[in-house]
Image (tube, rainbow, N blue to C red; front, side, top):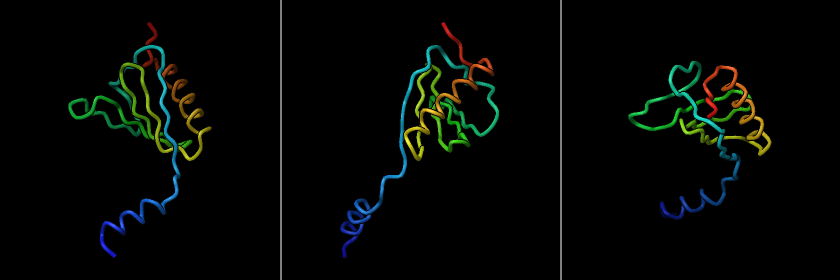
Length: 98
């Protein structure tokens, strides 16, 4: 079996296991000074990468208020994770509403 045939077979046999969603929070988000499991290197990528533990997802958080949630097992996990993130941003006063 050629390498191309093997790749094609792999692509079609793998089940889809994750969901991705996006949202916009009204306001701007301060990306500096976060703690926890984050990566923020604005010279390389304009979003903060935040690893959330429960539900287990990864957020891409942009200063404009736009967020991307990836890696959720179920669609409801996306909604739960985004709501938990919104609450945490407001509690830590990094979500600035215009």
